[in-house]
Length: 367
Image (cartoon, rainbow, N blue to C red; front, side):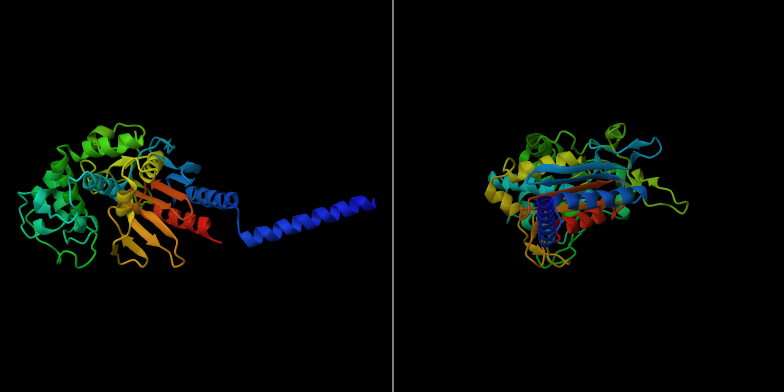
């Protein structure tokens, strides 16, 4: 009996030691994932999130779950195979494409637009450099507004955007400040076309999507993909009747080099692995692509080349890009210091995915 009490006391001591160690070292990875799952379940029940969440560690998926409906009218649920519009996340692909051409010696980052688009209508704009376009410091402005709304379905190719916006001037002296420019990335896409001799869509398919194994990612026109049962319908914010409404009237004719195509969470994970294993670019140009170069208005956030680099006050570095428009919100974040990659895609307005990413980041990186 005495021996049993001694064993019991020893077990109690061991349990107390393990408990103290748990407190000292914080939550385990499984604890953090369970907390994340609980939050996602609650947001789904409250209809605050519809989409897919993927978390990976050191290139391997440790959590993936779909929530809500891809098609509310037909009660078609989101799944891991559901394709979501990615908005401006497509700028990552454009950045990779440009850097591939730089690596191949076909493009120089300090060259001007006019070097490649020799007939560009506005001569001041033609002096903006490739680097300035990549970093959003060229002053080339946006594409969205009355012009886009009036000609949305006529803007079928990148050259159509240049025909519409090519005569307008600059917003500021190139290089003087950072100002997010969708039109700048349209120009980069057109440069990719001229240099490669391929359409932008064909180039990224041949040189990024196919090598990475991204079989569910593309920029096909909406009238082609609308019948795809794996495509999520974008739903804009609730109207006064407290209902979601399809946001298809806001979609461009097709995805462009500024964004707007579609992908899956799994494909973005394949992109992550291909990029950082140097299947798309060698190490030198991968680092050039993802290293922050220009300060943005957000503290700790620098813009790289189609990627954003964030450094926290304690020095942790993360790389990625987000996207948002009516009925769509997504985010890709990878952290070299911890090995975590977080991918969230939603068919709801921002900040549906952004809020999820913030919550996940807080859980994974807290002490």
